[in-house]
Amino acid sequence: MRFAVVDDMEEVLKTIHNLIIQYTNDYEINVDCYASAGAFLDNYSTRNYDALFLDIDMPDISGFKIAEILHEHGYNIPIVYITGRDDLITNAFRYKPIGFVRKQHLETELEFTIDTIKSELNMATVYISVKEPRTFGGKDYSLNVDEILYFKTAKHYLEIKLINNKAITIRDKISNYSDNPKLKNFVMIDSGILINLAHIKVVDNAVELSNGERMLISRRRVQFVLQAYIKYSKKVLI
Image (tube, rainbow, N blue to C red; front, top):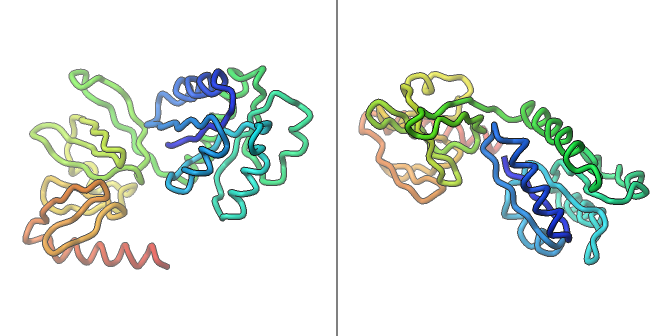
C-alpha cells in the first residue's frame, strides 16, 4: 500500500507518518509526506496512492481545494481529512471522504480510520500472506498481488521481488504460487520464474520488467508466454 500525507505542520506530519507505520505493520507500506499542498500537487500524478491523509486548513491551498483539483482530474482516491477544527468537518462531504481525524485525537481516530481503509482496500485488492524464515528476519507480510514483479526460485528458497525493488525471501515451492488463483495474471517464463504480466513487455525471447530487469524466456515457453501476454493486454484494454 502507498499513502500520502499532506500537512503544513511538521510535528503533525511526523506523528501521522509514525502512527500509520505502527497501525499497518502487517502490510508492505510506503508513506510519502508533503509539508505543503503545492509539493503534493507537483508529485501526485506520478504516484499510485491508495489513500490520502489531507489537512483541511493550510495556508497555501486548502484541503478542500486539493480534493476539488483531484476530482476534476479524475484522480479518485480515498481521502481522510485531518483537522484541528470541528467546524470544518460539516463542509467536507462533497467528495465523499473515507474518514476524519481530529488532530487532538490522532492516535485513537487514526487507528480506526486505517482499519476502515484496510477493509475497503481488501475488498478491491488481492493480497497473499507470506512469512520469512528466521534467518531472513522472520517477518510476516501481506502483499498486494499487483505490487509483485515476480517469484524466483533460489535453491530451497523463493525470492519475491516487489515493484519498489524490495526482495522478500521465503522457504516455499514456486508450484504453490503458479497454480494459485489469486495470481491469475502471472505466467511461468521458465521452470523457476513466475512473472507478473502487468509489469512486463515481451521482446523476442525475453521479458523486460518495469524496473529495468531483463529475463530470458525458456525456448519451450516462448509461444505460451507471448500468447498469455497478448491475452492479458487485450483484457486490460477492454
